[in-house]
Amino acid sequence: MVRVSTSVSSQRSERRIAVRLPMYVRGRDSRGIVFEEETSSENLCRSGAAFLTRFDVAVGSDLEIRIPFSNYVSRRMESDFATRGRVVHVAEAQSHGEKLVGVHFTGPRFQRLFRSESAA
Image 1 (cartoon, rainbow, N blue to C red):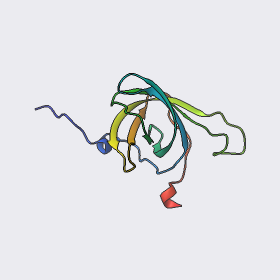
Image 2 (image 1 turned 90 degrees about the horizontal axis):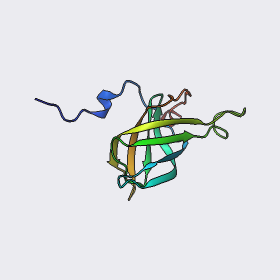
Image 3 (image 1 turned 30 degrees about the vertical axis):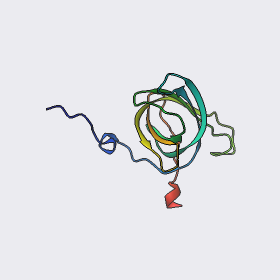
């Protein structure tokens, strides 16, 4: 017997932190059309993130992701975090016309630590 689907949470080795950071996402939608979007993270860990998008992206799609640090992380100028990611899940969002997309970073991992907004 072949198991077709595996729970996303059972695949995760790290706990995601609910934190909203600005994100720039670039890739191809499910029709192959290039898009670029400014959005924000819903949650984040060292090896992945979830964010809302108005674009229809497919599981398995590769994306370029950038999280700017200049105004959010520290007073000293740091370069933005840039990586690549592969879409591992897509779900309908509560807001009309948007999707909640989960990506696993296939490039550099996120090295910053943040306290969860729900813990603040």
